[in-house]
Length: 283
Image (cartoon, rainbow, N blue to C red; front, side, top):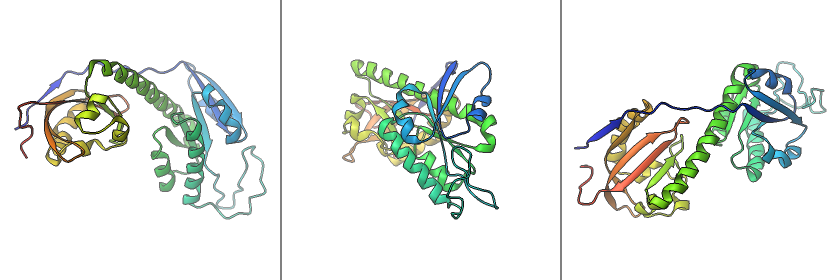
């Protein structure tokens, strides 16, 4: 039988920057500038193309790009300057076409800046476009009609996640010296960072472990228990401790003591120690 304990959570601390540097590819600068409150000093600049934005990635906090403007119901497709373009006679772009254009832009951005926060402004949140954005962990999407209401929160969420990620990396670097077996799992459920000791316990190396679903590291019964007992506890702001059975890459299992906590961006922190002389989880 599994035993678990919960620890009273510490009050969360969320830090919002007082200065933000935004670079917009195309127009929309005025609406974006008006979206932020007076407590945030926002610098908004624009460039005509993504290519002209690339040399400035290191100097900004967030990049704003736009999905292709949909020309529907007799409206004209206008270029980034707001003027009618030569392409207004084209058929309305399909959902997949718009998503593909955004995917191409993100691929270009990630070549130079893998973790630069990006916000996509779209006429409509189509399923294809939403999936494209969600596949990139550092991108959010906002409908143009909701720019004033939602845009600041999307930017702050991305910047907070980047701050927490930086802190997590520093923490992992420090625990390497102590030999602690710790991993950070992103909100999608995949290992984002792992200490050397953590990777060794699961018969892997750190690079190979990155991107692995955390559920692949435990037996089915252990996963079921973590999902039913540990995750709800963490979601309420507590830390959870219990016994589980881990699974190495070879398929071999081992009894483990697991400590589980959460970060403000819904990432998880796993600390796993092999329990010598214990049978672990009864399956």
